[in-house]
View 1: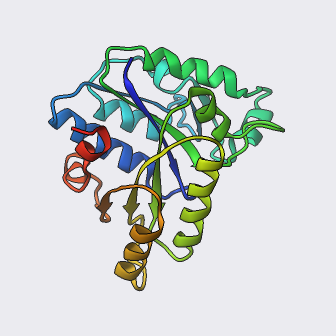
View 2: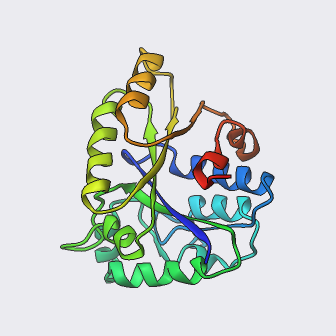
Length: 225
């Protein structure tokens, strides 16, 4: 079975997809085959495609159908459980985990499962996306959006991941916008307080380039290479 990690963030729009694409390219450069899953995506174009899922497909080595990469594509770019309600659909953690396992059982050496928003994003009245990661038992990669409030959000998320019985395998500091005040001081504080290895610090890349992003990420530390 592939080595699999669940990618979550301290919030929405913190760069989970950018980091995932960078890690996929870094793994490819290390000679590994890769695949990714975006089990739930909220926000699609007129053809029903989500841009994050499309980006993952463009940066992984395996040729997998869109429906496997993004099995649940919701039209509105809102909270997944609300978008699902608007479409008369029901999301369940066990079902989403099962859809992820199809790719996890592929020939890929590395599989990344990208969540939506943060760790506790609801998918129905009682479950969150965290329940999908728990169902799968996968270690977690945390993407920290480097902006005001990131230390509190990162520490609370790390605590929640560990409380749910999962391993925080590593974290990445991502700059999703203008560089925050006291960036270095915040970064050093996170390195000191988060209970996992820092896999890299990703600067704002405009336009985004996954190959360039991969140069800032240490996939070997993640995989123990």
